[in-house]
Structures are given as structure tokens and as C-alpha cells.
Length: 219
Length: 191
Image 1 (tube, rainbow over the protein chains, first blue to last red):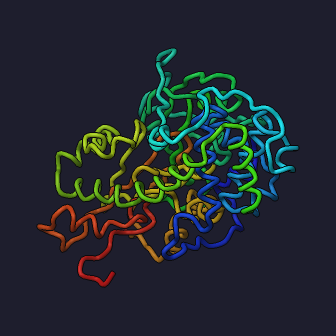
Image 2 (cartoon, one colour):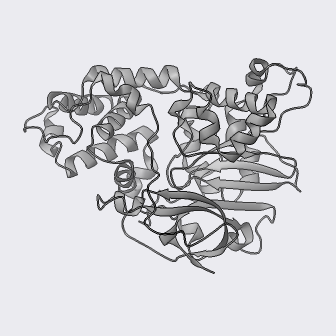
Image 3 (cartoon, each protein chain N blue to C red):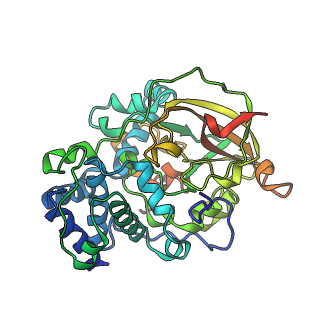
């Protein structure tokens, strides 16, 4: 979706302001939000792509003005309501009032914590041979799906070169919609800055994205 | 926010979805087990051991998993080497993808609009915000983490560190030097 989350190349957000000695969490609730997202994901309530889609789907003014973990909280709550794990009534009451919906992997308990600290595996068996190889010139397709995608707007329509074949991987565009993993080849594609930003761009800059095969066409 | 978060946790707990003690354990694991010290050890080893460095650049997931306690890194780590000819910088313009297992949770600036919007268009301007400058003839390569691949920058080993142990070297490897928005600490400079 063409949301405000897709920020690459936008102007007006000001300077980067590093915070000296930044703590891991600024308040206790931030850690609880992180833990709830990880736990409910591990319990099977949603996959990582769906959780990203719910954060992107927050109203633009909410997305822009919310802290990182506030976005995580709001996305989690919307996601759990939409999937029927909790209800808006329960949120208002601050208590459970309806029976639980069974979780794919059951209740998240202490013995499963080590599992969430290990990074997920996204590689899958390829359904077909890769269409592109390193060195190939490719154009990022001009696609504008209204659902989740990982092809940022700033590369759409532009020509780059395949640098790496990263293997075959879960396809976020369908996984986010719970429409299947639909494995696709994934490539690192490099663009010259002038191709992306026009003649005034810094000629020493190159930018790459990791692009799934359906995002690309031969150029 | 605190009340709203507590309310959601109460609901999840009452419905039997999560054990609150498991949430405590997750927070504790993040607070104690992950952080940039992990990445710093990998960088220090790459600086000290040419065979490891080569293995890291060829297949970072595999190379890092041979170090035993880093097995949690998974399958999708790529290490990119800074050289006098090329400076690498990592961003996630779409959200906040970051090599947690190597660097810990990302700092706020990494997740915020100024960095995400400008890193791909004006990386030298972003580096200037950090007080960092890269020679004008050096190529700047920005890696936008748009899938599940995670990128670790292997910074250049500073001069004046000849003969140092891996533990000494790890001390000068900063988080930002592994994102590409900084350099390792200068040997001998006050920290």
C-alpha cells in the first residue's frame, strides 16, 4: 500500500537526532508491547508480514505522530481484533468477556521464550528456476497494490542491476494477507542514484533494495 | 499508554493466550542477551582472522553460526565490507528491519522518519548529522533492508591497532560503525 510508512526519499522530516546513551526501553510498557507482539506471533496469531501490514494500516496522522512502540501496540490491538482473538468490547472493558479463540500453537509459556529469541527461517523450496542472475538489468515494476508490499515507491519504474540472488523466500505480499507463503526468488538490486533521483543526484551513491521476483521485469 | 498496554496484557492473560511470566522472560532476554557486543565480537574476529573474514563475507549466517553462541542469528545475515573505495550504510525505509541478533534492538533514530526518509536520497547529509564524513571520491552504498535479509557492516580496522587481541578490538567497535553511520573508536582517544 502507498502509505506514509514508505518513507524513502521523502523530504521535510528534519535532521537525524541520535540520543546519547539511549536505553533499550524508555518506559516499562514498551518492553511489554514488544513481548506481547513476539509472544502472540509465536503462538500463531499472525505472521511477521501481517503484523507489519497492521502497523502500516494505521491512519497516516497516527503513524506519523506515534512513537515506535505506540505503533506496535496499536497495530497489535487492531490485528488481534480483526482476527477475532480479542474484541473492541474487551479493550473498552480492560478485561476478557468472550471465550478465547484457539491459537495455532497454543498458549505462549515460559518454556517457549528461547524459541522467539531465535530468528525465523524464511527460505523455502523454489517452485521454479530463478528468472534473473547477478549482472542482469531489471526494472522494478510500476505496481501499486493497496495491500502489503515490500517494493518501495522510490524504486518503482526504475532500472537497476541484480547483484545477489538471496534464494527463494516467503512472499510478504501474500503472506501478509494470509493467502499463503507463495515462495519467490529474492534478489538484491542496485540502482544508481541518478536513476532514482535525477541528474542532480550525488554520483557516488548507489542504493539497493531486496526485491522479490514478481517485483521485477527484464530491462 | 501504560494503562492501555496493561489492559491488553490483562485480556491476553485472562483469555489464556500468554503467560505473563513468559512476557517477563522475553523482556529480560532482550535486556540481557542481545546487544551490539555480539556484532562487535564478530567484527573483531574478522579483523583478526583472515579465514573467518573471508567466510563471513561469503556467507555471514554460516560463519557466525560456527561461533556457537550466535546460533540464534538464523539464515539471512549478509556482511558488507567497508573499504577505502566503498562505504556501506544500512537502512529500512519501510519499517525498522535491523540485525537484532548482532546489534540488539535498533535505536530510535534508526526507526524514525528523518533517517528512513533521507538515508537513500542524501546519505552524505545523514552522515553529517552524525558528525561523520566519508571522502568525496568514496562510493556510498546504501542497503535498504526491504526483505528478511539483515545487513551487518564490517568497518575498516583502524590504524594503530596492530597486535591487539580480539577482546581489545571488540572494545572499539561501535554500534553505529556496524550500521554505517559511524566509525570504530580511535585507538588511544578518550572514550
